Amino acid sequence: MTGLAIAGGVALLFLWLLRQAMPSPRDRQLERLRRAARARGLVVALRPESPAHTGDQVRPGGTQRQEKLHRPFYGLPLSPVAGAPRPKWRADWRADDEVRMAPLPPGWILRPGTLVLTDSVLEALSALLAQAPPGVQGVVAEGAQLGAFWTERGEAAQVEALAVWLEALRAFHRKQTARSEAPHPAL
Image (cartoon, rainbow, N blue to C red; front, side):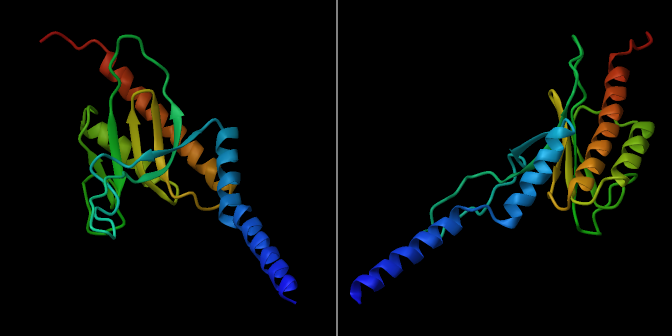
């Protein structure tokens, strides 16, 4: 009887370990979303939110923790422009209804960067940010990539909407890059 109990315990432990090794429904959903994004030409990575945002600062034992939060980032490559600096910018979305940065849509904040903020630029960016798909929490354009921090909810249709929106943002960014390259009239 003791041998049977031990064999049953080992079998239960084996089944529990097997269950832990299997992907959860959320893991399978994330894989479907990321596969659809890669098929659409998007680059998917986990990126630190920003140097200023970190996780819990104190561990349960009282020691300091310095890990940065990593969030899903869906991006598109930006084509290189010889000899021209690219405008660098970042916009973050906050769920707080009190956050307002005119003329941007409610909840959006534009972080300081190299984007020249004329009225026409802000209006164009505002129109694009107002069309952001659900779950977009921020947009970053820097270096050779433009992308969005996204909550990864939904199915392939949401990935498609995100890809179309990111392509519109890339066109906006290219237009701003062309403006910064254009020769300025002599004063």
